[in-house]
Image (cartoon, rainbow, N blue to C red; front, top):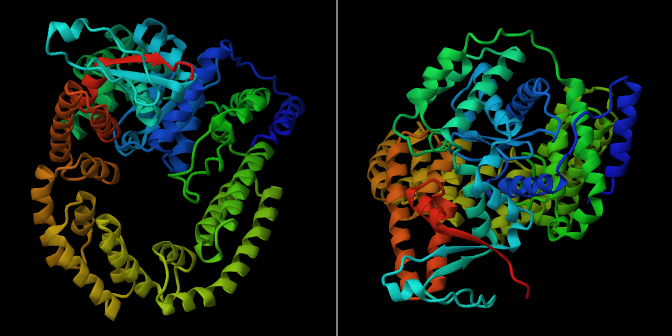
Amino acid sequence: MVKHCRHLAAFLALALALAGLPLPAQTISNPDLFAKSLEAAQQTIEQYGRYDNEKELARVNRIGYELTQNSDFQKFPFTFSLVDMAEPNAVSLPAGQIFVTRGLLDLGLTDDMLACVLGHEVGHVVLEHYLHMDRRATLMSVLGNILLAGVIIGAERSSSRQSSAPQAPYDPRVGYENQAGNRIEGVAAANLILSELLLRSYSRENEDAADQEGQRLAAAAGYDPDGARQMWVLMSSRTPEAKEFGYWRTHPFPDERIRAAEARKQTWKVQAKRPADSYRLRTQAVLMSYLERQRSKLEGSPRGRRPPEKPLPGEVNAAKAPVTVASYLKDAALSTWPQGKVADAIRLERLHAQRDQQLAKPLLARDYGSLVRAYQKQREVVRLATPDSEFLTTVASELADFDRKLKELYPRAVSVFKGGVYETAFLSSFLSNFPEAREVPEVALALGDAYSRLGNETDAVTQYLAAEKAAPDSGEGRRARAGLRNLAPNLKELAALQQLVDQNRDTELKRLAAERLDAMAKTYDDVANGAEYLRRFPTGPHLSEVIARLNVLADNLYGEVVLYQGVGDSTKALERINKILTNAPLSPAAEKLRDRAVLVAQRGA
């Protein structure tokens, strides 16, 4: 998986020396903490997903490194990543991994605001605030082996006799079977640990100190420190109804902080901007060097062995591909300095992994269309940065090969479709491979019908809309509109209804969907339904109602957790705990679960 890292790290060191740049100033002063923090970073991406927005990723990294080169902090290399979370938030891990959510970027922050947000998170790292949080230190102690850690959610005991009962030994086959608590492992444990790590706020003193450091770094990097006040004012105006949502949870006391930011903004003189290219190259060298040193360990771990690696943003099955520590480091190295031979080698390795993944599938299930788009996307990025790169020649040759394969595949795919015997995956691949084909309206309609039969309302609506848009006056277009009108009055999925409300080609359908959504936003009965709406429409018109209902449903599940723990039904209790943590991690119910959580180490088998 990381077989090329030794050559990449050596090449990078040589390039730095030939360019007259100093070798890496950053160090990894605490390898154990860095490894655990990396594990948490990798789990964060795996749990929440990477936000695919190349433009915003480049902006965050540009501003982030302009800030950090002024920090004189050399204990760990900083990295900046985007996560696909609807909640407006930014968080940092102790060893310099900083995350910005899709929800925060969707607010439309100016560069000055973003610089102060990033500077705040850098401040937490530079000032080592994690050392002042005993609970966070406990969390970090288990992150190095996060999937082999466990969490016990303590049950609320109804009598003193139960309270004094000894804890039964843990049996890995059935978990804890007494009424004192339930053990969570695997994804649910990781979810709760990460929620605790990422969503807990610092003390008022630490938050204030990070604010001040963030404003100082912003001014030193050439940004207006008043961006901190401007960001808080924007947050107050854009999300006044969502005080329990996102940034408000992890960065409290907005009124006080607005006043403090206003008072401090004249403290520093805004300096001239200067590029951070050499600093970014040195950071990349540190990351690649670490990856090479840890190669055997990463390849020998369960995470290191799981194929395929995480694709580049926007590539095939990006949302479902597993993330490894090695792939996280490569993504970080690529974002740190996204041009040159090191970056191009990482890109090509990832593209080839995706190509090989598709070629291993049956012929008619291969998604060449997504591959072509991934190749084209990376080609354009490299062409703008380094137009003489050898990467472009390789990609051009492979794109030509994909084009030949698609031309050969098309007649066979049409024949299969006309034959009427196929799976849903074939229809999806057909639309991806041949988006301009004359069969698209008919195929999209068939896929919408298939999703409708399977009860997948959101995807059914998406395909019906696609069929209607492709050929509105055709028989397929009319049938798609009929299918949508039949669905609308009984749709339960909020995201599907919002899609219909947002379309403007059928006013009657728009009215039906709006009426249905107005009612369902306040009465839906599945936490996953609300979570999907927030993911798809983070600034949707029904945001406040959906959040309020989500919190009610999560609290109902919490009551069931207590009930099932009380009667000793661990399976049902754990099912509901997992639903809360997965779909409503910011709810009061999830907060209560975190308050009752006790971390435990995995015992030997």
